[in-house]
Every structure is written in C-alpha cells, then in structure tokens.
Length: 441
Image 1 (cartoon, helix red, strand yellow):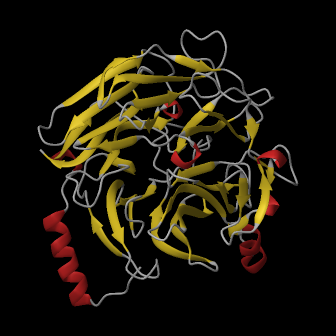
Image 2: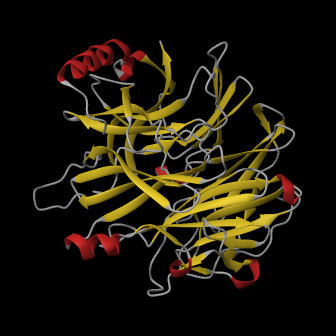
C-alpha cells in the first residue's frame, strides 16, 4: 500500500469519515439474497437498468431488475425453494437483441423437483424485461464422474456467429463446457477443459472472462485451498479453436482437450514461495478481466495462514506477469457457531475482491475494520505498484462481503457495485443475508 505521511494520513482519515457511510445508509437491492463467487456474471447493466440474481434464504432462485432513474426494483422467483445453498446463484448472458438468458444449477446435488441433475436455463420473452419468460430448459449431459453440476459461466463470442459457451464444474470435479450455436436449442457434448498432470483427484477452481468477440480468458487453481497446501494460480486463453499462454504460445486445441496445468502460464507459484520461505502459501482465484489493451488482469488471495488473508493483483504487461499486493484482507468472515474443539469449516472464505471490468485499474474488496467487514474501492495509476484506497462503508453493524462490480456499468453509471450484507452467515447453506447497492437512501 502507498506510504503516506502522518499529516497525509490525518487528511485521509478525515476525508474517509466524510465520504464513507454505514452500510445501513445504502439502499437495499434485496432484503433476502446471497451468492457465491464462481458463477458469473451475477449482475449486468443494459441501458439504465441493472439485472442481478441470487439465492434466497429458502433456496429460491431470484432474478431482479433495478431502474437507476426511478429506483424501482422488481424481483421474480424463477425456481421456488430450489436449493438452499449460495453456490446455486444464477448467472446472466445478454443476447444480441437485449433479451436475457439465465443459468443456474444446484450445488452438486439435485434441486427441488429434479429427477436428474442439470443446468437449468431460461430466456426472457422480451428485451430488457424479466416479467415474462420462455419455458425453462435443461442441459443434462455432464463430464463422466460421481459429482453433479455446480457453477455456471456463460460466454458469447460474436465472431463465432454468436456461439454460446457454457462452463461449469463437471462430474469429475474438473472445469467442463459445452457450446450451442442456436441459443440453447441444442448443445454440443461436454468436454473437460483442464486436468492436473500429477493428481487426477485435484479439482481446479476457475474464473472466466471474455471480450465478447473472439477470446475467452481463464484463471484457475490447482484445487481448493482446503485440500492443497501448495495452491497456485494459472492462466489460459482461448481463441479461434486454440488455447494459448499470455504470450501467444499455443498449448492445445479443441481437439486435444483437456489442457494440462503444467502447459499453462503460472501466474503465482505457491511451490516457489515454499522453496523460498518454507511456508506453504495457498492462493485462491477471485476474478479475471481484460484491460484496455486486451491483456489479462486478475485478482486473487494469498493465504499464508488461515487467519491471514491478502489481496493480490496480477497483470500481464505484454512480456511477463506482474504481481503486486493490494491490501491485507484480514481473516475469514463466516460466523460459525462452534465449540472450541470444532474447526472453522471455511477458513479460506475472504471478504471478497472483484475487478471493475470496464476499468481494470479499479478493484472493490471487503476486509475487516475492527470486527466488522467493510467495503472498499482501490485504484492504481501504475499497474498495481501502489494503490489509493477509499472506504465505501464504515462503522457498519453487520458484515459487508463479496462485492461485485456490475458488468457493463461504465464510469458514468449511477451504480457501480452490489454486495452482501450478513445478518447471519455461518456457512453456504446457513445464511440470512441481503444485497446492498451503492446508492444512498
């Protein structure tokens, strides 16, 4: 973080106290909603409306629209009591005619009313209107394995005749995808994207972004930090049927899938950190985007200890990966009611960090101030070497976590982010949370 003088610190704290507000001072987008960070986009903007989705306390899959001019918010329950688990939150795809496609699945189980596992998807009847939907459809073919579906990440490439790629975690725990050339009427057979070259039991966690034209970027891990004492961050790019490193080196094609971890860019090597310090620093991926040059940028956490989380920024500069620290991130946020003999079940859940996909020099994150998690914005003017931090919330009574920068919200948009405010969050199946938006009441 940038070093400032004592006088500068005083001025900064005064300005901070004048600009930041308690989270309760911000508008509530929904009084009942939660989400995980591996199904995206969770919120998109079209013209002056924001469209977002989440899982309600009873497991219902919710979709909402918010008019930034009038402040009116409409919520639609598209699958009542489907799966009480924040991993089931829906993802969005904006079609060329401005209709919306929404994708969701239960968390590696059967959702309410399902007889076989699937990713369910639905399309609005009219552009920019969530009040009417076409009949829901289901993608049921999965990679072979004992697991069911989890997470959904749709991408459309205009230069491939609007082919839609849908990525998820497959039956073998590996990143899996299928594609459709007719907006979901028919899907290709599923394919595994990434496979460990040393241990087939690993389950990579992946984040995905795209320029919407001809490229898809992937950032991923060895596995879950709970299981991987050395959990690194990798990068891969898809373009025109081939897979590349950031420097353009071809490492595979659609015909040679899956791609091995060892053939991809290593953005952060946990193994090298261990060799230097004998400290098994784990990492976990949070987001990836493209900068104004089309170069990949990502944010992730390093976890030198379960109670010590750190936010990092990685940027491809055209010849190499540059990694820089943004901020300390505190510890985990779940408030799990347990005895001293019980272990915190999710100690790697950070407050959360996300890139502004319209300006990758800007990030939003959650970290504790005292005992309460607050939302911050940070910006860099030197590719991540230094950061200027501004508090969005301060002196809140409840934890504010998992901020999400609304896709398509330009710098002049009235609203930039949504986040979760926790009345209670013990774990991903036991929560009572709301969704806040950065508008004052």
